[in-house]
Image 1: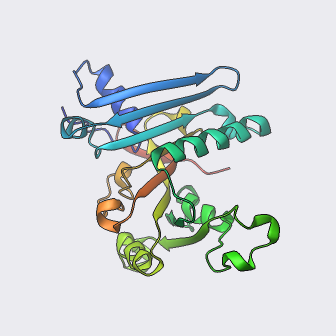
Image 2: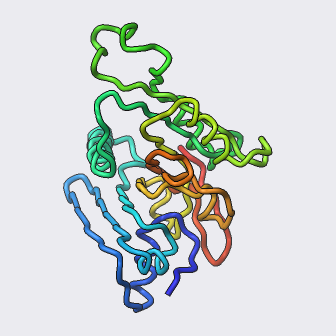
Length: 245
């Protein structure tokens, strides 16, 4: 059975299929819960084409970190979530020392619920232009060569986003691309309280039913990790946008 619900979260596709009572093969799920900090981490692995067809998502790993503390001014919880995110990112792809990273902030900076990617790019410490020899001494050997790109959306640029990213990647030659985007979810409780990471790349706008070229290893030529936060939810075919705090 192919899931026909609109959501960017693999976890929600898995939940929908389970609630429908259908058998599902080719998908493995593990869950870790930290009751003290209220953090749940779910790892959904789509292992073959049977699972991919049923889930409506490519073969790959999808890690979901959930915590209501993301919405709150809870420094301790935020620090723990950052550490968990870093550890899981390392498990999705083991980068070698000296690897070059390209951060791509997807979305429309002029539409608040879709501005997550460009806003992330503004806060990235970009270092590729500095060079190791020009780094402050206390940072030498501690940071990678990182560049950031906010390519905008096709409605503004007239260019497919994947084409822009591919053109830059061919010049920059990163060892990995991290694509950050706002996502769509089916449950309001997950809005601004969930982070999903995946080594399967991303199809911008897929959760809202838009058809855009994929940004993944096959199209970019290097591994792509997709990172996203739900800022919109879909209920009875209507799309509701939540504003980022």
